[in-house]
Length: 444
Image (cartoon, rainbow, N blue to C red; front, side, top):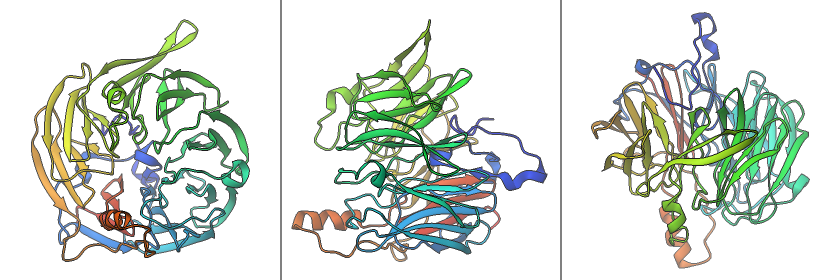
């Protein structure tokens, strides 16, 4: 049974279940997850195993290795403190909190990303990248192995809203995408010591999407879907293998693998409609394969209806699912791109949905998870809140005054608690807001 195309499931014996893991953004290479392990219904009073505070504020997703959960956050009026925090998955107990100083402090504002990139983890350690350009490698016990600053190495970013692309790992390296108004590039760092293994320059652009590793035949490519192009890179050398520029509005969501060199592309026209026409041609299923000795990139199909916001579209059991900023879910047949249904759920989503067993979990940004029946008919199985209006989660928002009345009104809206990301291993569903971590467990 497939959990989700991007979850490459492996079978583990009971003796090595400590290897259960959700080791990166959107669960890349997640293992040991069964459909029956996560409930379809819960409430703040039922199935909540624990909840705990996170220092400062962060927009990254949790990652899991064995019995430990890791998150990142920033703290201080200029985001000068960078946190990598570790908790026990069974109890929520704080195990350690590694703090280091930012090499590129900037105002702590709701308008600028705050610990937005999700870390990655392997058997040797956890690797966290912050929008300041700082990268730190730690052991599972919190001991620093090395630290490096991409800002000192290549120059500071200029994007007034910050950076958020999460790193992807491949064998002995971290691959980090910096798409910015200033210098833009994709680079590979050694997991062993942080040194540069390669760096490939890119055209400057404003984007917040993350690169993803996409299997293509017997190999893998690092694919970037970002603000006007789709690009595939060799993770060993950094060589750009192909590029496709007939897209637009693809500056937030990531290219989720659908297998065999295929992946989904999500694009939005933007708040002002600046990418309206190209975005309508840019939501669909894309494929890259060899045509003789050359790579051939092309859309298999597109559909002009779905418009994603921050949540990446997913593939599950023969259907593709988009969700927009108004909470409208678009379900499309993965083979043809034809609509199966278009219906609204209770909340829009910043976190990407997850397919599990017979269900799709949509994690609403205001804390309500809507569970839908998987398939071509719209059926709400449950709606599950994490908190109530009377008892909202901790939310360590910036306290500095904004520069105008308009920004103050917007800041009030963006200052509400937001559910940013999830991680799942057997029996544990971990959800994170800016300043709090929640654990749903079926035996509670």
